[in-house]
Image (cartoon, rainbow, N blue to C red; front, side):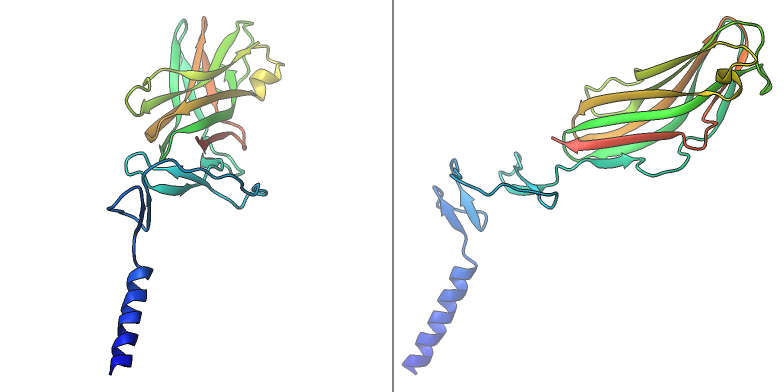
Length: 227
């Protein structure tokens, strides 16, 4: 009987140790290992390749967590036409801004975000796709802005602009075939929810039709690298 009791006590003791929480500099650990103080690692192997993650501290709880610091595509990253064709007739002496696309994304951590787009643009006679012959230059611009973002991020403020001036000669490939406009920006952004707009702007002293996105490989990419 004594032998059976000893065996039961040993099993219970082993089970208790297996599920125990260990505290260093704390009498009331709240995790399997709870360290109240600084830690030092005197040596470690160097990570190679891409199959590894970083360890970070959750400032709200003090917990150590595994975090992936690899760049991630939030929008784009595939082949094909990502921007639909959009045209607007621009009246003489005016300017228009056209939303070419709207993209919502979430950052779970502060990140370095690379936003880029390439869109074909061309200018033709108002109401048609015929080439211009009046010799008056027309300007077209591609840019981004945020329509929603965490507090402190400016809204409805264009950034990353790229521009193109159309020569408006009937033989110009800039008019008949169009030419790509590129926009790019790299931003350090806090965690939160965002809505990005891709904008096309067109202006000139004389009327014309502005067309964006006629190419078959117009693209936009948003790539985030957690900090």
